[in-house]
Length: 302
Image: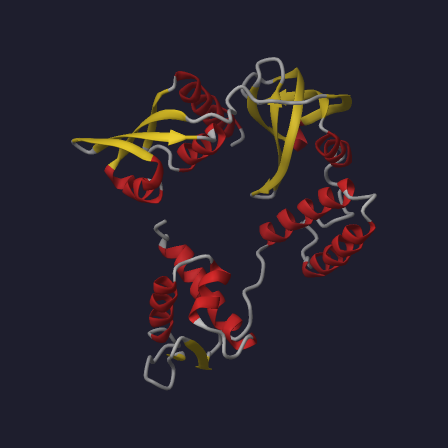
């Protein structure tokens, strides 16, 4: 996997406080902790060694030493503390913990640990606009949706469709909620068409919990599927990250046609969407249609 510059920068900043908290840590241990190769850790440390405060003399640079496989931070400059969570990260963690608490009511040990962690996360949220565990008044259907997710129950929705500017009736199987740009979203399967949809929670006008179902997506399959994509050369990183599942490639001008052996169609759909518009699905047709529909749904939210 090829790192983006942002991912590498964040990992490098995380390395410094981790080494300070774990004196004598080895490169092998750092490799395991950060899920990258030992060569990548050494490269990150070389990068850190060249960073520092304005002036950039030896007195302002971060001082790192690694000999015989052991790493030491001699002068961390101002990077001696772990990075703080962003507001959105706090919200995502709080929502996830809330759902885990709801589905672990009978597991006393897990429940105690989850509540302790939830309390710690709650203390990080000083901004009133941040949704914290136990404070869900801004989203009146949060509890109902959480219950439906944990119990795998259908939801009957009255939803204000912005594309049609009308109230529509939807029967959905909820999968997860997530927070994005200050709004709460519900990812669910529309059972009438057996397809993924994204709903903005504050556009839900009515929400009733229904029967328990064993939901199964049309696109999900335990068997492997050959997916054909046209990838712009500007998105070559996508090819490098997924080289292990590529079975064939053919260049044609600025486009590379790739054949991938995929076992999780939902994953490749999300990968294509996250790299849009640089990747086009050629086949299978149901995947191409699902990507187009998801893109339309996402655009309708803005």
